[in-house]
Image 1 (spheres, helix red, strand yellow):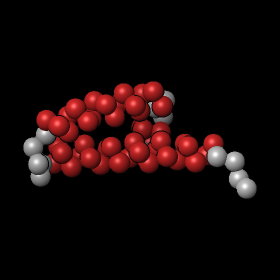
Image 2 (cartoon, rainbow, N blue to C red):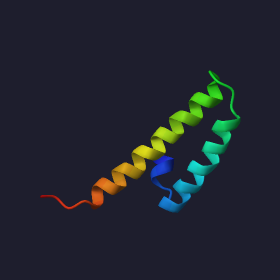
Image 3 (cartoon, helix red, strand yellow):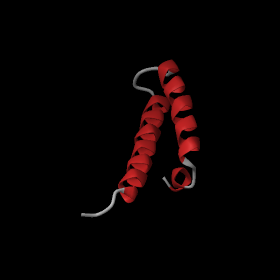
Image 4 (cartoon, rainbow, N blue to C red):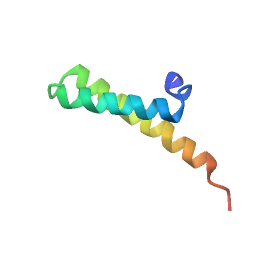
Length: 58
């Protein structure tokens, strides 16, 4: 997570694209596939957190 938080939004999107390609090539129920899915979840979390920080409070 710390490494992902240091990436720019453009870098995160590039990583997301690469991981989706790897996901399509991965075998079901493998450690590699689980790691790819976990990293994609973490990227989503970082992106959503950044978006939430920019939303003004009511």
